[in-house]
Image (tube, rainbow, N blue to C red; front, top):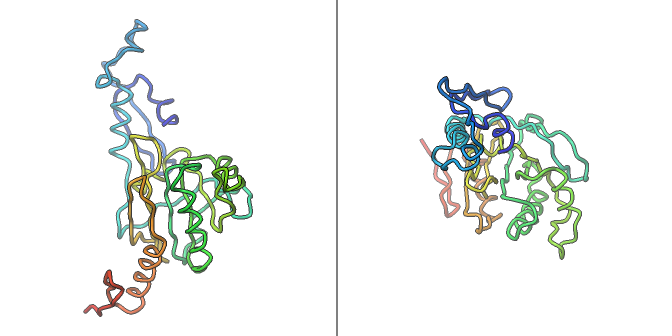
Length: 240
């Protein structure tokens, strides 16, 4: 994470998460001394690397949302379906169901088929706002959607693609793959009140089923409207 390591390189000390700015501050350890020899800087054992220690501490303290909690706000650049690059603010969609589709990267093998499938589902479920999120830049999103499908492009999509280039969104939604520095293949369903109702994560090589996503959304709606639980078979049962 470049935005972290630019601040914490060669420091080991107290780490503090800033909720309002999605950033951290580092207080150097009082006993820490700058290495004097170049070999000390470049050939540290991994377990002794102070930057790695601070990075691990940072990942532990970042608040991660759970099902039943209020969804963290999302403000970032996005590529709109029309092809324009704009600022995305999730609060503008309050009152609608929102599906946050996290995926590893543009230009990969599984992601294009998923995004095209969800684009069709978004057109079908026009009362639900779908949002794609990866760590790619908005310019990478734009190139991906404009490239021919035979060359790895995804084509025009019916929902925006958000750029989580700082990885903050993926971290807050517990969708960050720290080992690879990318988002996991998962999705989060947020209800009309802004509450996280469902979270799912797949292995990176396993695509998601749009029919199952639709079933989950409809089950949540049915439960809210009728006070009944929905089973995996699609049957409903009234709750007391």
